Image (cartoon, rainbow, N blue to C red; front, side, top):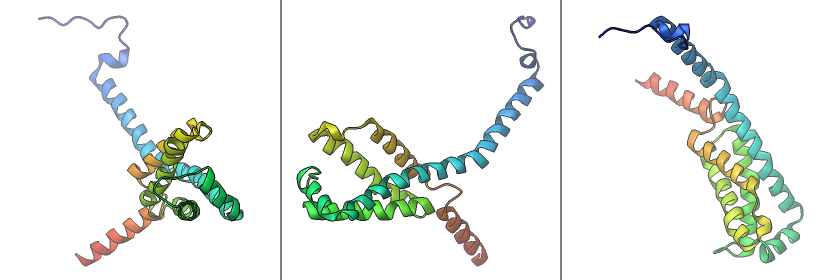
Length: 173
């Protein structure tokens, strides 16, 4: 079997194995750079994007507690929970979990109840009242699920504590 010359459409770098190797190296270098520098910034940006959304909502709830209780009694009827307990849990969650997100402390654990809140808003409250159904909630759910899967990233207290723990464990061995 004889080899045919490369077709005129084949790029010159693809005709030589060394060209493919250089292209592969360039791709790997670019991916490594993104993993090292861009991914931590993206993780931080996601945390800093989600935190104020929920924190402002928590501030609004405690800023007018009688109105919040009224809303949980009349509008935000959450199954299985009495309105006053649901209001208290919602406000506490919205004021504490965003602080943890900003710090990147217990990020996965902090994102979990916020994801549950977004799911409840979209699918429980949204099913009862279409005014609560908002496509933006899907975006929130996606970002929060990403935090649960990936954690806080390299620019987080979680990462610092893991690094510190590994150093101490290394000292013991």
